[in-house]
Image (cartoon, rainbow, N blue to C red; front, side, top):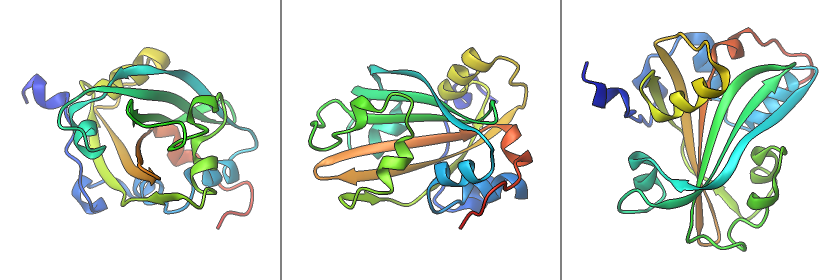
Length: 190
């Protein structure tokens, strides 16, 4: 396999396109708020903000958010932790041209969950989930590895979703880490 192909992900509109094991598949296809599901599967849920700043989006992100080529975006990366254990690496991009009225809370999230705002804002529309297998050379996995170290699995599974609010777009990519499959419900989850 060429190294260039390791830096890219092929996104599929159907979960069967990634042949994920059943335990991971169950998490990938969560239709409601992933945050709500993780809260229900832990005693202590936490969003650990890694960074939030201006950056360049990836090529496949550019197309998804309506840019002709990679350009300036606001990006945010977090680890979602259940009982102290990182279970999801999340990466969000918003085109730099978006206005504060498009995404009024994005810049002030801090360590709050983005999902908790997206799912309760009546102006937000959610697109379809897309799924991918992410390999070691992929930029998002490299970023996660820089924070976590010890990520030895050759393939990780991810999903992404495009959200719209007013004239703005926002793309959330979630990379599921192996410990997520060990979580068991601690509270009622719908």
